[in-house]
Every structure is written in C-alpha cells, then in structure tokens.
Amino acid sequence: MGKIVTHTLGCKVNFADTQSVAEQLLAGEVTCSGDDRAAYQGNGGMECTNRGTGAPVEIVGTCCVTAEGEKQSRKEVRRALRRVGPEGRVFVTGCAARLAPEVFEAMGENVEAVAGEPAEAAAAIAARLGMGWPAPAVGEAALEHDSGAVDDGGFRSPEGGGKVDRRTRRTRFFLKVQEGCAGMCSYCVVPLVRGRPRSLPAAALQAEAAARVSGGFLELVATGINVGAYRDGPVRLPGLLAALAATPGLLRLRLSSIEATDVTPELVDVLAGNEVIGRHLHLPLQSGDDGVLADMGRCYRRADFAAAVARIREALPGVNLTTDVIVGYPAEDEAAFERTLEFVEEMGFSKAHVFTYSQRPGTRAAAQGDPVPPPEKKRRSLRLRRLSDRLGHAFRERKLGQVSEVLWESPLPSGGLGGYSSDYTRFTVPDAVTAPVGRVLAEAVTGDGIKGRLVDGWQEEG
Image (cartoon, rainbow, N blue to C red; front, side):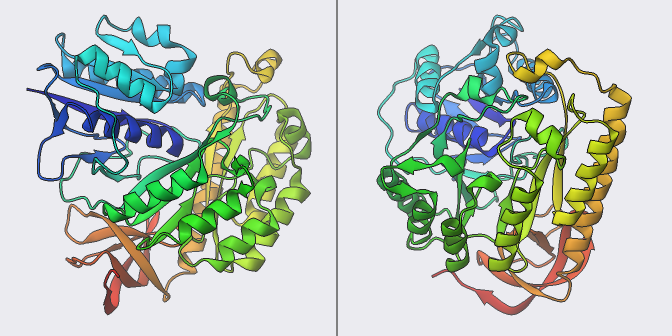
C-alpha cells in the first residue's frame, strides 16, 4: 500500500488550495494512517494509504512570486522524486505549475503538472491514480495542520515547517474566500496565473465555517489573492467577516494579507467590534518611496498608507502590523531605499518580510532590466531584515508583564506547548496542558516569540 504526501510552498492561498486538494482526495479512495486520518503541515504533509496505487505519491504545491520561490519549488520536486523513487509519482500544483508546467514535467517521466482549481486538480490526480471519485461533502475529511511554514506573499524557507507530529491539534483552517486579482503591479505575475477576481458565495462560506468549527477547528483564516476585493452581491468583506465571526464555537478568526487601500472605515469598525477577530493585520507595503510606488503601479502613496495605519491603530490599540517589502526594484536607488527604511520604522511594523526583486517573465517591470547589482540587493536586504528584527524585538518586549490569551497549536520537542495570541505573537510555555486556550504571562523574549507561564488556570472551551 502506498502513501500520498503533500508539501506546500508559498502564501496562505496556496496552502488553502493544497489543503483542499488533499481533503477532496481523502473524500475519495484514500484513507489515512493513524487515528486522526491526516496530520497536515506546510512541510511534512499528509501521509495516507492510497487504495488506487501501491506506489508512493507526493503532491507539491509550488510558488512563483519570486525567482527564489520557483527555485525552492523545483528543489522540493527534486526531493520528492528522490523520495518516491522510480516507481512513484509526483504531482505539481500551484502557481509555478500554472506558469511553466513544462519546466516541471521535464524533470522526470513520473512528474506531472496539474493546473486548475483545487477540485480540478484533485479530480485529475484521482484519475491518474485510478481512484474512485465521489463528490466530497464539506467537513467530511478531518485535516490537522499547522501554518508555521507559510507567510503572506512568501515562499517556504528551507528551515520552515518540520515533520508531522501526530499530537498536533486540529487548530487552524484556511478558508479561501476569494481568488484572482485585477491589479496591474509591474513586478507581479500572480494575475497571469490566478486570473481575474472572483469571490465565493457568502452563504456557502458561512456553512463551511460552521462545518469546520463543528469538526473541531478552533481558528479560521479568511484568505484570498486579493481578499479586500471580496464581493458577493451586496456583501463586501466587512459583512463577510462579521458573519464568519458569529460562527458558534469559533474561538478566533484571522484575516490574511490585505491592501491598505481596502482598510475602509467599515472594515475597521468590524475589526474593532468583534473580539473573535485577531488583532493582527498584514499590509503589503512593497516600498516606502512614492516614486518607486508609482513605477510599481501600486495604487497608493506613503501618505495614503500612513493614514490607513493611523486609522487601524486608533481603533485597535496594540494591534500587530506586519508587511512585505521588495528591495532592489529597478527604479529603487539608494535614496529611495533609505526612504523605505525610514518609513518602515515610522510605521512600527513588528515584521517586514523582505523580498529581493527578480524579473518575472510577462511583467511590465521585466522590460526595465535588472540594474541593481546582486551585492547591493543583498546589502539592502540585510539592512531591512536587521531593522525588522529590531522592531519585532521591541514589539515583543512591550508585551512583557502582560497577560495574553493563547490558542495552542503544537507540542514542543522539549515538552510544553506553542501557540499564538490574538495579535499573532507566538508564545511557548513549559507546561503540559489539555485545554485549547490558556492565559499566559509574558516573561521573556526568545528569538521570534515569547516565553511565558500559565496564570489563573485555564479557560475551557465553550
């Protein structure tokens, strides 16, 4: 009997898509080993018994947002090929597979690129493996997963993720609410591979949210390629979030990456009025220089972005804001980079995900060449990452002595648990616990998280 193992690189939408493919295969002719049917993680995957074939099978969800993302995707496929051996199969999904399927299929006779939406990809994989294909029901498969290896807009770093641990709680489910983008950013290939914006029906999303929570998930992450563009008749993103936040039994709702231009007063009111919604927002900046922003085709300038941040901070004191920044863009000179550094510090982000610019075929920026030398890109990236580390440390230090409610996600190798507070700060405690939520006193900053101790007992579910 063979296994199916999944690996995902890229953003939360990519993770949600791989999650969906795996789940739909589980609803068909695949059964998982162990009591929990599936232990699912960004870099560890799902291990299942496949009744359709005795050979091992791996599914790799790929990323093409940067050249490095594509490189890591190819590397993961090569790893998968070594793992499955000559008799196994590797199916490649995700953005890089849509952009250049021939690149992956040239890597081996047993590699196949599978494009399309998750249902199409799952059906294609099932057909190739000779599996039956009943229509899956929402919530039929119980997937457990951890999102530690996935960041907005980024690819999975080699050290991210880890091996599957059967003790991992079924905590977080990525609920894709929207697909596609109409943006015309000069550097971005995503609209080419994801298509025009389209939204899932609000009623269907509410039903799925209820099913996921009933099935044991404690946290939902509303995600999309351009989630701020959500439209279902009169329902816009604020209304959808308010409806999802009202799901009985839901402990936490998160919003994935959102453009600053979509931070409307209505959205801020919903965020401030619903304690279930996490106090964390990821606002992609890309550059803090107006000239570079204009060249990129971004639809805001520094003043617009700063106004959105001020609106959020006024309504949500203590909110955690993170961002994305591109360094080495063709129009970015040293002065523009210095303005970006200054602006990132002014905004007080706790984390800046730094992306080194790389030419993307089919984008407008590709015609400008790549004039910033690699050593200069590396220097700028290092300076920005150091600033990000300093800002993040300062943000976590301000939490010392405070008590946060932490939703536990995974056991620690040394014992105890790790989890996240409402503002997406990672906490660890040495205690052995059973309840899903704990109140933790922050005692020390450790790396990119906080070490604490339990106080006032536990808050039991329900």
